[in-house]
Amino acid sequence: MEKTAKLLDGKALAAKIQQELSIAITQLQPKIGRSPGLAVLMVGDNPASAAYVRNKEKACTKVGIASFGKHFSTDTTQTELEEVIATLNNDERVDGILVQLPLPHHLDAVTLLHQIDPEKDADGLHPVNLGRLVRGEAGLRSCTPAGVMRLLQEYEIPLAGKQAVVVGRSILVGKPMALMLLEADATVTIAHSRSHDLKTITQNADILIAAVGRPGLISADMVKPGAVVVDVGMNRVTDANGNSRLVGDVDFESTAGVAEFLTPVPGGVGPMTVAILLQNTFTSYSKTAK
Ligand SMILES: NC(=O)c1ccc[n+]([C@@H]2O[C@H](COP(=O)([O-])OP(=O)(O)OC[C@H]3O[C@@H](n4cnc5c(N)ncnc54)[C@H](OP(=O)(O)O)[C@@H]3O)[C@@H](O)[C@H]2O)c1
Image (cartoon, rainbow, N blue to C red):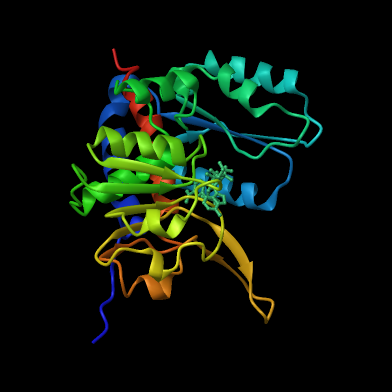
């Protein structure tokens, strides 16, 4: 019988984390005297972003986090957004602030990110928090790579001394992912669009993380037998019949015959990203307890 990889079930783990958070919030609330609060700022009407924001707000409601989200029209100015962030930084009801990306072209996302109070940086992308990660200090961690780490931990996948390959070097996923794996004592290689002979690099990976945004980039022949494969990619593809669906960067069907563990898309890393966002908000909230 053909071997099939075990699934790293992010959806189930995210549900478990949410349940734990819900209990922890109920316990802490009397002490703090309010619910935790998260403000998701969205500008414009990108349908994918709107769906992500709805998803995050729904998850907040489920665990008892109040949403202070704001939706701005496409022509909102940089100054207006900076003022909103300054107000939220000083709002004691708000523990987490995030700016949903991408933003319309006239806005400077990096400058906005710098304005967020690092202690309320629920996405873990502020330079102070990325600096803490580089230094191995405690701090709010970037949600997607932290979600991947939590998933690997849940399935007791050993990382120390293992060859880990991260494909993709974005500041959102690839770089912090590589740093977290390094922190867990893996031997880390980062591949990117300028890497030569990607197949030789990925074939060496005990732990392979694909964070590129290209459907089917990783095929079964690029995967070491018995590897742990985590697919961060989220790509919407349309088939010949005009039906659209979400796929990752990894060719799931063929890779399932080679890998030991594999994340599904959807239902793998995506729900974990949201769970860590809620967890980061809770971490900031719990620090306000006197
Ligand atoms: N599941 C989740 O919660 C979640 C969260 C965030 C992102 N994502 C998904 O993850 C994917 C990556 O997101 P991102 O924000 O990191 O994207 P990004 O900023 O576009 O970065 C993509 C990275 O992939 C590299 N790359 C491009 N083509 C390549 C190739 N042929 N071979 C090797 N590397 C290549 C790029 O290299 P260069 O640096 O050389 O250009 C870059 O470092 C997307 O599909 C995104 O939707 C999912």
